[in-house]
Image (cartoon, rainbow, N blue to C red):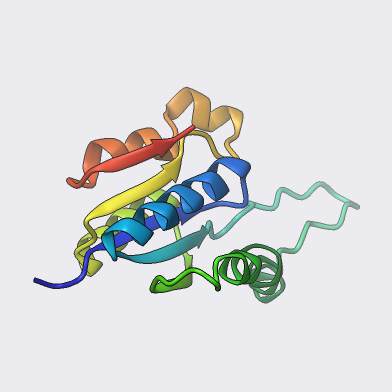
Length: 145
């Protein structure tokens, strides 16, 4: 039997950090591999311009570098002393689609996500990433408070 895999959705929120900690602590007991996945939503903003106002320009490379340096690398460093297989991945796309695709493609055994994330008012009206994933991934989903 192959080693189990836990995927953790990371979004730079305290809830996603707690989800990572929960997955990592469980993996110490089960021997599962843990993969931290940050999905950078692209385009993150849709520029709206008004005459005479410069549009906001989103630099993808700068944002990817910021995420790696301030979110993913510190998480990997924090848990580097643990005797577990831990890796991270940064993906460009829509969070629900990309996380569910990773679960399927990697044959993950469990998905850990924060119960709340860096959501907007639109997310509250239309349904959160956590709620949508819980309904579509087909594996146990741990919603970490």
